[in-house]
Length: 240
Length: 131
Image (spheres, rainbow over the protein chains, first blue to last red):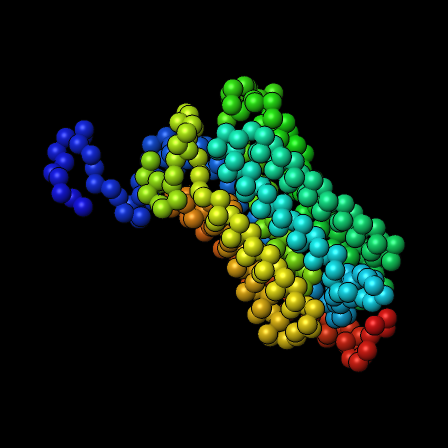
């Protein structure tokens, strides 16, 4: 590696190893994460704080579920749907999971086509993502309607531990809010892409910063995070 | 641009714009991960559908969950190709939640114990009402 004797500051330094690169980044002047557009670390830090919010929700759900003396309602039966004359367990939740994963796939493709400056395809993929997200929220609204009409309340339900209702409404409600905000965010960015705001670096209406395709990737981070949270909710709340 | 030393770092060749250093990878990898996520979701649904119970159920749920989460974060969110400092800055702090998890588990255990001691008749009932 160190084949040259670097004496002056102008000479190229040897390429640092992984740990040196971390130390250099963390201790650097004015700017860490060199070469990363600043919006990305900002979104990541926001997502980190969101991780703690959802983490706290899921851990408090674990705490109330583990401490109740009354049996927990069987989610497999609670969330089953009548299809073709028989009860299919967790059917709606499974469909919601597939819808959200599909939207994550179209989002990943949208980011890719955005960096290729393919406006039309990026727009179509973003709108497809928004449509799938809206479908997800619609199905969640149906699920809430179904459970509320069956008598589930934050303070009780007909099948067992009262904490079931509060955990359910809190966790899925917060997640649904995130999806809804994501859909709005997706539509805004899709319109910007189609209008060519990002190609022509037109200033945004809120921040006044010049548009570029990094915002599609940043939006993608948010959207994939929503999917990521659903993975954990699906595992711990619905399947456990 | 030290972060371009990975195999997928193909710069946007035909558009050398001012922001050409974005994450650009072949499309194939996204389709592969997408398919894999579908398979894993179907597998975790099958765990419930086949009525797998007990330790095996919990193990399978956790394994499928972690695999899905890992694929989403590393490929869809591009963590695989991000600077190492950023990766650690984001992925290490959530481990603190393990502390909260431990505290929550202890607390729940204690609460169950006291509830069992003070509301004993309720816990002794073999089949609680309404179930």
